[in-house]
Length: 492
Image (cartoon, rainbow, N blue to C red):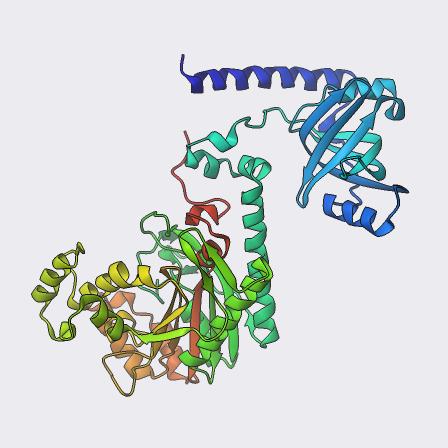
């Protein structure tokens, strides 16, 4: 019999035992699922209260609640710890203080049960703030045991599929998702302070625009036509610029029907922001300030540790370098951009890069950038003036019309935020869209082009991948570690 089968049998046995305990409780007139408790303090708040009072033992009562994660019976007394959102709180339960009958039932509780405890605060000889229980209430009976050797599991998919267990037993995961929440809060506060208006735009769209990606398709029964889950937020937000909302942002879910990888999940979160009378350089200031603010909130520092070596320094001015300059340096070929497609493919092989020969000329160069250049950009780097073929929504650079007034911010070896001087010429925008879609004219967003013809002010726009920002700030190894419920194949 293999080890996993033994664990399954043990879990099944414990499930049966706990079901019997629940039945016994109900026969004795106690139904934990009908009970509740008034939580007056979280674990953190209770500890702060004790520190503020500064006495050996308080007379003021508190009520804490949480899941039992440790349980140590010592005859007539028991020490246990309950875990809530803020952390863990030690509880001391004595038979003489809660009554013999209550204590007899109390000792039959299991790890994973959720209880409420009312009592006073004191500190143990080891210096741990503790609740001296006067009474307790069982408010939820755990019918399944907690995993005993969770940290030894090698099946990461089980961790992602049963995220609730991961959150119960893995402090690192709980902390990371609290940090993610802090990042979202700081982004909102930062944008509000700059007079941006937060908005919500459609997640189902008749045309999948604003990015080059494969959409998820759905059918709208009431209208009897296909719609798409959005692949970007951009085109509706720019309609709002036309409408006179000069500073807008949205934090929203975006969907791309593409592959799964360490850095890609089909469903992810984007911040997009648009500011009238600004440009891509204005977006540099906005993006730098926003990321610095998030780092200070989450880490308390602008120095971000890396597993691989040197810290990433978010302070001061960030490097700015042209896309073409990076390509020429990486290929060690000053004539790269005048080479034929065949010459570039041959040179790529010599550089040790595997490239699909079916790619367009500009796509080959961008593949070189993504595989050879981007992984080396560890410190914050604004990569500017990307080729015009890579984006149909930005303004041409006046000095070099083969490039765009755009930057891609790369940190820790990956792109984290692109930004543009937004194209507001409706005729040029239509031409750039037509060049992109070719004969697939149905993919042209005519409604957006109509909006532009009413006049959109010059503007800067920026997109920031929230999941990638959290990866960077928390040191997560995988995008799925930053998403509470990442995309998985349906369970059996």
